[in-house]
Image 1 (tube, helix red, strand yellow):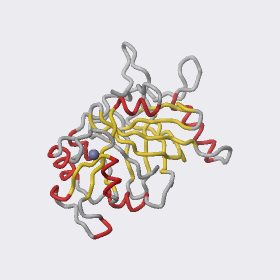
Image 2 (tube, helix red, strand yellow; image 1 turned 60 degrees about the vertical axis):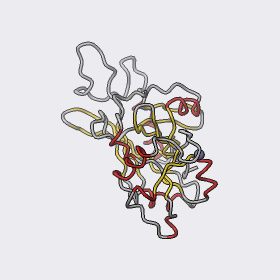
Image 3 (cartoon, protein in one colour; image 1 turned 45 degrees about the horizontal axis):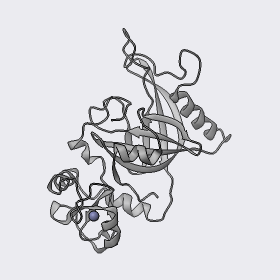
Image 4 (cartoon, protein in one colour; image 1 turned 60 degrees about the horizontal axis):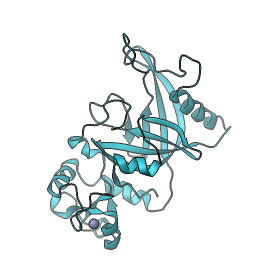
Length: 245
Ligand SMILES: [Zn+2]
């Protein structure tokens, strides 16, 4: 469901994944796929980023666990734990390399993006297609590259449309509508709804023609949805660490 980029609570996210998600990287959380949590907040401790033109996600690996007397931000990001077993970095890395070398299909990864404290955006399902390590400020960091799995033919128009609503408008709409569907007041499965459908030439320049709708009312309306994109950075706390919350 590439088009389904709902806003969900932390509780909903856990319910959906049947897990208590506390780490950013969750290799093979389920037999069929992995789960990552990410943030592109300006002050986020990890440098995740969207390459929106290709829909590509560049995701940073995790630091060493915090221990007394150490600074995880100065140490190499671990491939393995001290006991020798692969860290999450190592598991994702080996999966990416196996795919690149033609030994296995790409790892399927479901991505959630933190919008604000307790509020997450379901970014959909991706394939892990590449990984590398880089020297950054004197230490080794991992980078992972994921591309969206194209599930429906509507994915592309929605991606394009998503960029049409400026961040400032999204923030204004979110605040004006109080983070709830304007029809039923639900705060679940919200989307930005463009009052004049993009296909009919609607402009999204002002908050006046953008509103929050739940999935049900958005479907009833029958127009394309606007996902709540990382705008939300403006109102968000972001990830304090590679941890949920
Ligand atoms: Zn509603």
